Length: 374
Image (cartoon, rainbow, N blue to C red; front, side, top):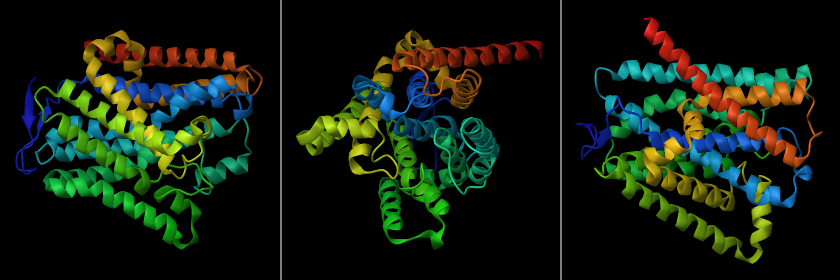
């Protein structure tokens, strides 16, 4: 595998994949995260929890709890692969600006999709209040987290790659500890929305920048470690599988007395916002399991499950597509809100996943034709 070195920015130079070659295992893992998100949104976008049968909550809806943690971890890993080789080079200012511009693009779609999500069921006043950060949407709020993260991450990356290993190891712990202390001891001058954005709030469905930021930093650490190994695929898969086993094992030790009740509670999003220990142990355990399978399967698995890999290649377009299908077509135009069975909701969601993959493939074709015309 051809690699480039990040000289002068880490105490021991880190081998990274060539920026010219995509690593399909990462696209596949990201695709799994977005596909699970679509599964969650497709079902919950049409039904209430009361309409979901027990076998739908556990295991089907339970598995979707891997998605947000997986997506954030993959975001951190991708930063190492795609942008790490350029940090400290003459190309970095352009790459940094590209990240910042993408943050603004995501922020634009976050606001547009907020309107799309809320229009069928909410008043104009409620929608306007949400656009002005007086409230938050549910299904598209992850884009709000991603947009803001893309504004501070480019400023952190040069510092990150210059920092000694001990500082990088300590950073996620310090950030997570700060989030915990702020949540319990600081009211953000009485601004609920600001607290929700930074460390989360029990009244709002948000991913806090400081509360979830440690997962980005863990992703950076994992990316640097994994791609410092020449035979990174299977060693990384083994590492991720070990992490998954420890996390799931810890969850089992806590929940073993009432395991079924804990699983149902997590399936119903209890402990997701703000994050509690049990939810995060389960979610991260699943996220690392998916990463282990993605790296072990490599390009072969990514090709076999091509629709999922396609979705992972352009997560923003996948997000835009599935939100429009669920909320414009299913909810608004077809009037399916709470008027279909769970089995029908699953079928409609499978169709959304297929439509999303076809949409991404069509964009790939269009871009290739445009390059051919030039």
